[in-house]
Length: 237
Image (cartoon, rainbow, N blue to C red; front, side):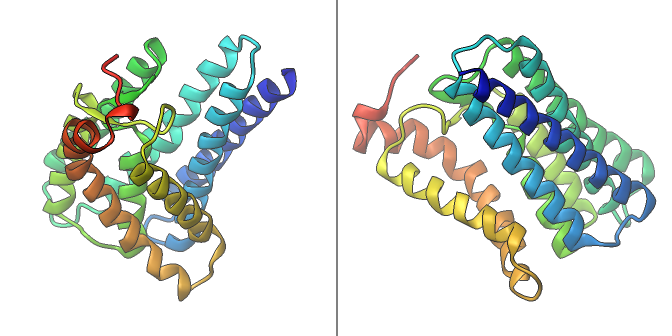
């Protein structure tokens, strides 16, 4: 069981290292190497998912790993989306660009702190930080949308992360629809990292609109579809 604890910590460490590499490119060469930066961030999110998986497989207490996980997510799902969002706000007054992207960063840290204090059980309370990260890095890969659209996405993403709205969690029981979506999403993330251009170009718009779909459909699915059609997978606590 100790092995899984160490694997979880290693995954968190790799997540943070990849996040810092992405930050380096975004600060020193903004707008360049879009495909490379996108693949780095998506790979970091995969390590983040592995970290959670290994942690749940371990029976050993791992308080350091819990903090390391949050710090790593603060880089890849907090700082990176902040830099990406700001870089896409062409034509937006500087003050509004700073405030809206700063709000996204604040909401990400707020969501991570809340998760650290009360880990997810059956549903997420608010959108998890990884989804806005995938949304904005996909927009970065496409170089679209830009400007005021990004301002709106920052505000919406921040509000949804800070909210208490119930969203499907991959840690609890999953109904058949969620299971299928999870498997397809996992395959898609792997291809997102592995495929070179021009095949790679298929995936940023798919994942961008997938996150938009999750934002809007996730709540309806959790509150209504799950109770009506898959009640045995629903738990109020």
